[in-house]
Image (cartoon, rainbow, N blue to C red; front, side, top):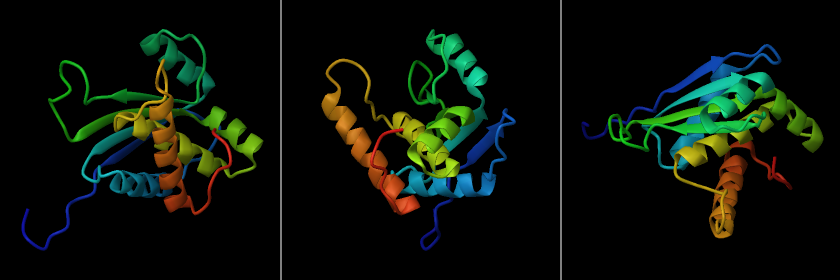
Length: 163
């Protein structure tokens, strides 16, 4: 890189396979890039997939052997036998727009904020943060604190609960 030049922001690819909500892709891309910059992953590439509950259930069942819908799933491309092939690519995050809408209504927040919160959660998993499994209480607190701090930095308010 030449001195005095800015590094290029990573790609955020977006695919929507749902008909429940029209997405503002430019806004999503901007906010996710800001989050990735705050997390020290400015030059990384990420793919986002927005689906309905049935779509995320199919992903959850097919890849994780959990035959139920969920709100967000992350697929890391940095792990496993071939994780080092393209270190610039973080992976994929799939979000159920239907779940985000329900969670937004329950929390009385805009659906776009719930969508961003779920995408951020998925990105944090791709960055190596974890909250599930035995003995992960401390790691869960760290992940939650980072998620809340990044959300606040970008959205300007704190959530009083977990989506």
